[in-house]
Image 1 (tube, rainbow, N blue to C red):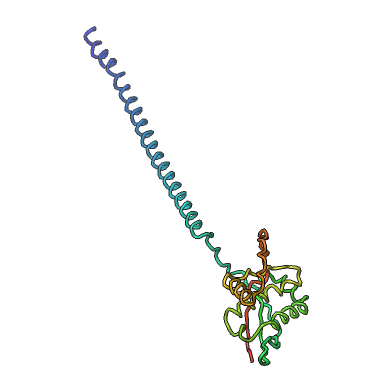
Image 2: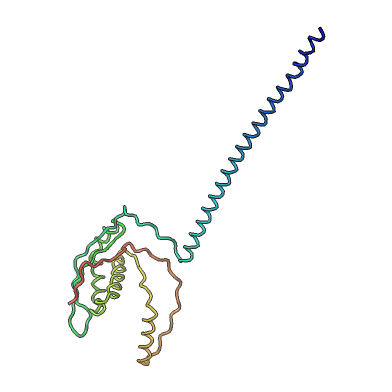
Length: 221
């Protein structure tokens, strides 16, 4: 009886160790899964950090480029926004030539960013035309025949156009060459040199609603 019970006891005693091994295998598998998951998370985290660092470096480089050029990158042109064009009736005016009578026939079209401003300009058109005629009457044919003279005329027309609206646009400062020429003329005439004016504090720039002056006709006779 004791001999028959001995094998059963051995089987019963061997059973618990097999169960313990199975549990150990499950624990090891779980640890491996956690390690793999943790490793994947670490890789993802490192990739994310690398991407953020690359983006920051690129942004810094763009900022340095903008600073080196002294200005930011130009904004993209908005093709959906079409400017308003306001054509004026042609101007016919006698020029300021002293040797002979010369006159100019000039067609002007104003490019305006806002249609509302265009309507305001139409209401002030008599005053605007008067200002432009006054500018043209002080020009000589020699001035207007040169490209630089046409560009200067366009700038003056832009200022005169918005003046009736109460918008004052400062005229550009004379170039150093022009100032030197004036000083030389004063020396030749033995005239006292004018005192240099103190530089005034820079005023904030006023935005001109008239963006461009286009010449549709330019005849000088």
